Length: 438
Image 1 (cartoon, helix red, strand yellow):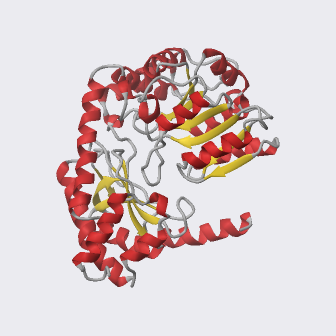
Image 2: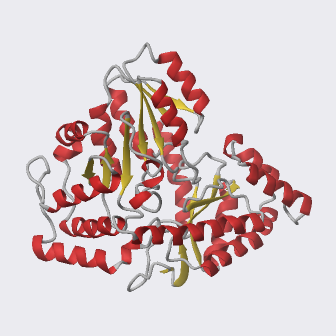
């Protein structure tokens, strides 16, 4: 599909969602509690936040932001190529300790990718990109294509295919890079880090760049994330993390295996030269967040979140809901299939006071729409139970109203995405003979 046709198709699709008051919304609260939000004059339990540990409302982060404004004002408006606010030095030192490797703070993960990838990828390299890697990496990869660097697409999490590609091209290219997410932001599944490390150890020309935006903070020692939480950074690995999600503030970090590579990206990365700095309030709050992560308190917070995630998964088993991935990550995805099924379900949940995100094309395949439920420490066990009960109640109703069946879900979602537990749930529902599902 040509780009102008694609844009028109996306605009038409999302215009429908906007008209149904499911998209481009605003909160109407005078202040936020984390647990609930007011949307369209209705108080809703918030299953849409990516601030998984709930740190955005922590008084220490607020005080850190206040103190930084008092000391440095609301903005330090100079390119980092010339000079940085002194808070950067303290923050990058804390994050280097936290992640166990040299860390560069950037304004966003998107700008981080645009700084790092054109700098570290050689014109003689080959890039292999997971077909579900985040759109920000896909956008940065276009900068590589302009230089004539080949970028190939790999089936999602297919390590056998990846190894075949490494074997086939390792003598043709200087290095082979694999781009992946630590935690995939749509379906909530994870990259097989141990397998990647084995491949890194086996093939000298193989390198990995991972976006762990949704994996950092809520898991791993001191919040090192889903990738670095499984061991020290590999000498041929670069990891990007978001500080705008579970860290509770804003910004991002790029973690390098050595100081030399960090300095190279700091010096040569385009957005590092031409982009703006984080505001002092952001830096002050991030320093407070980093100090919490470096304390033992963070592991108590992580355990509380894990308890909620596991409870959500358990209830999906009890109610036999089509949960795409059984991982214990805070992104939980209920597969529905067609857009109209998803619209119907979301409207019912909104009306009953549950705010959930939803995914649809182009974020997921055309027939891969579903509910994207984010679990945070703000939520109670009763909140989670209430949501699951509502989804379970409405599922047969929605499928009957839209004249679809559970077999459609099996067809809509590619086989490699369907876990054994997912298929077992579908089979259980079929045997149960629930109205509208067969």
